[in-house]
Amino acid sequence: LRRKWSLARCASSALSTSMSTATIVVTGGALLAGAVYRYAFTGRRSAAKLIDDSKRLHRAKDYGGSLAAATEACELGLKEGPTQHRLALLHLAALFHATRKFDEALDTLDQVEFTAGLVDDERDLVPVLHARAEVLELAEKPLALAAAELSRARDIRKRASGPESMDAGFAAFNLARVIAHQSQESKVVPDALLGARTASTHSAAEVAALIEQAASLVLEAHRVVLAAGDADEAAELVREILDILKIGAADGVDGAVFKGMGGIASAVDGAT
Image 1 (cartoon, one colour):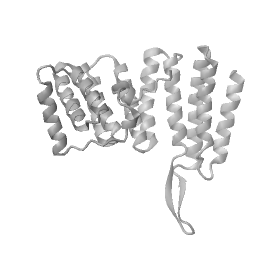
Image 2 (cartoon, helix red, strand yellow):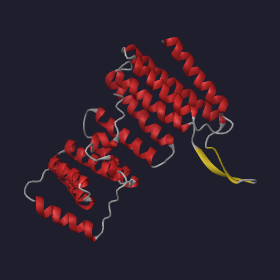
Image 3 (cartoon, rainbow, N blue to C red):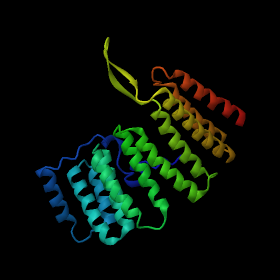
Image 4 (cartoon, rainbow, N blue to C red):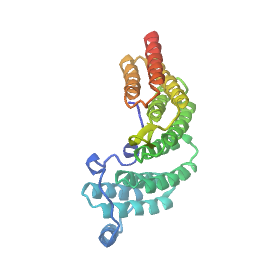
């Protein structure tokens, strides 16, 4: 319902979560698998068929063959048109994501964004932006990068569906979730007594600002969903953000966390 547009959902829903730690090893064996694949399926290839074959091969743990099929799907998709090329690239990015090849996934998504720019409807960019945010988050890149992608997606969804639409409400929630986590980013720093300790990546003032931003966004989402008549879902959105803020608060910023949580709770009580 929240439509977080996960990369796996929008590009390769058939990939099971049990395969998320698999490794594509492009060795002689993988190249041989690709050659066998090309030989076996010559004569009935299309980008869509190759994507289906790639998913099937991945489920069968034939990662070399799956990658070969996905790569060929991108080549054929380029000839079939920007829409099919974009779908093939999204699937290839999903394979890289599932095997934790994050740099390759991000490079592929850059290509997807370029092909999406060839289509008139800017909404085609939304799954690309959400996919990139997901990869950046899983790769443990600075969360400001993921937040920037979700902010772009939110702007598009608001323009396309209206600022009071459920689509816009859930876009606000998605951004609030990442920013709430961003407020708790930490790093290891030297310590004279302990040797090393964990400290907040952000100053107390920056943490307070991030929490305030997350609170504003989740209250926006709460208002929209509540107005649509789904009080339970509206409350669940708020609970999820509060749960994030309850854990992992960096040293010295607890006051900002509790102030932000209190502000959210008070606003929700007033709205309901």
